[in-house]
Image 1: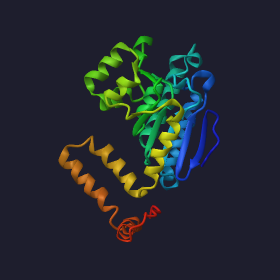
Image 2: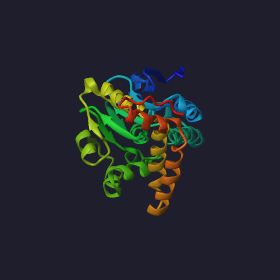
Image 3: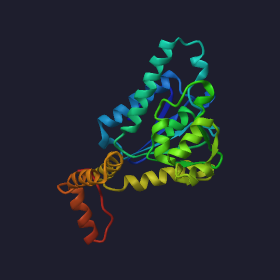
Image 4: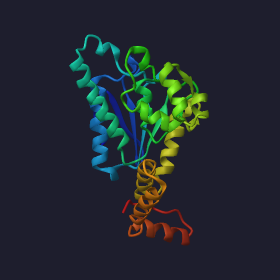
Length: 264
């Protein structure tokens, strides 16, 4: 890493941070089959070596769109079998994004519609430009969200709001997305990426095992009852006790200096 992909730009703009750009600007970064394959391959490789990076920033090429959803031009004329075979690639890519062991921040630089919004929703949190727009429009095309939208959107905005969004297919603004809890921060378009990378740098400066364990505890704990979640949290906590990073954190505090974490 970084690797070369047909539909993704993968860079390391700063230490410990991977910048992943959906790179089909001529098609508003729409998801075609190759983009699904590339996302699957990339995020599988991150899961296979989680210590290699400490944070991932995901954005789209250009200023018009983060991702416009599925590439309907590629889908024109597909047989039912071809459609389902392609969608299986998308499903696997989304699962790989959700399973990413390190934090993922989406920098939404424009429209995030349908599958594009579903990609953004796999991130741990979202920063967005003022002109960003969101929608799950599948119901207007005779289909439904099938890349996590019916699961991740209700977890972000609540079930009643999510059903209104999905059943009407109506787009919503970045201000609405923030007020509903889906977007963490609205950033000026010209500083969106820099602001997102600054947060990634702050995360990356923290103890990487701690960061990964926190993400895992939140994600798994939300699917448990409170008592089970508390037990899971303690198991995750105990993973840190024998680490060198835990000892370095205490040393640095007492020596009044910035800690240097090595993920050990």
